[in-house]
Amino acid sequence: LPASMVRYEGLCFPDGKPSGLLYPDFVLEGVDITVTESMPLELGVDESYTLTVSTPRAAITAKTQWGAIRALETLSQLIMWQPDLYEPGTSYYNIHNTTLTITDFPRFPWRGMLIDSSRNYLTVAGIKRSLDAMSYVKYNTLHWHLVDDQSWPLQSTSFPEFSKLGSYAPRAIYTAANVSDIVAYAWERGIRVVPEFDMPAHASIWGMAYPDLTIS
Image (cartoon, rainbow, N blue to C red):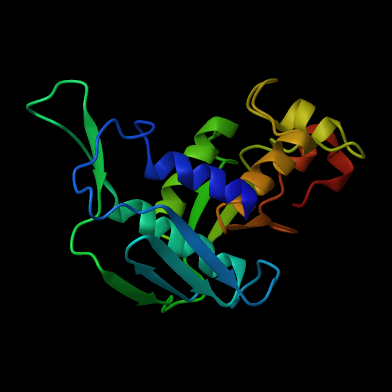
């Protein structure tokens, strides 16, 4: 959650600190977050929350840290940045219709997106952009189709020839560090990564490196 707090600070205030006060009588000084349980990120975890925005502080209450992350996402989308049209260089952040209270929970426990890097190699940066987009709409599962007949981009220490001969190109691979980086990046956004390995079907690419393992 601390890493998520830093991230949402940047999302809430993309232009840095405001240079003026649009409504001096209503200044939000901070956000109080109350989480009653720390739970692993798994299917069906409680993601409900209540967000209240009032002077001088906003309040988030959630059963789990994942609900708190969803609340921070909502808060970040409520804040509007605007420049002062009459005073160049002056900017403000504003939340309309305050005081307000939002109580929210997901209707579906699995809210996901599928990416297929076995048929179309995706860079680590590209996957992270997709994870960012997923977090904005509160998706919680990345279904990662890693390998198939067309390519094997995942590097293996036990069977190194898989990616050496089975990837589209020498640079079109995912190292163990790449995978760990993506999983950690997703976790900070409340997103689980579910990898898919097809076998015994969809495994003809094995024969590129290990003919004895080819499924016919």
